[in-house]
Image (cartoon, rainbow, N blue to C red):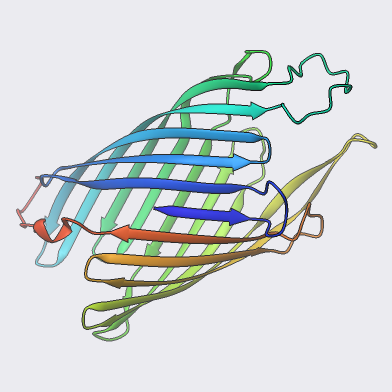
Length: 277
């Protein structure tokens, strides 16, 4: 479960709540689902998706374990645009003065590869998207998002490890990629696991100057700090993000709280079988 709030002190600031669950089905498959509520001013989106993953395990040598995974996700969403508080004398024929709703569906594709302490993931968001404009029911083609990341665990001693990673995102039509550089430390203290991390995101963000009909881009820079604790199947994480853009609607800072419960991972035991499972 996750709660995220942004733009502290701003009325009707963006907020997000999610509930998700996932688990293995035998040795070869996994199944997960997520429900979310995303509110941003007068716009509210609720949705749900289901994900299926298939794992191919390869054993090469005594400790060289490879896992190749494929995932497919399908989801639906419902958008609500609250126009009840809009001024009636705006003269916009598309404003109806009530709550206007639309819906859509999407399909995402994912690929993961794990080799012992190294991992890499590739995701295509909105591989298939079908939706309608919230005001005039025109069919929309939402841009695809490509996400790739990779990381590695380095064991410093029996109780401490470091996890550096990097990620790149690219959105269709925008042609403005963003990059993340991350570092995370893991500390095992008997039944208590502590995590500390930092992430720096940079790229280019568009800002339209409607008066001069120019598109002025600015550097997009964000710093995120993370801390978390896990104890006997219960985990809690806190994340704080601060943005350094020169042009902002309000000072951008966000807080995110995540609560997790591990119910059955101890029941899964990897049984090595040479070759493909």
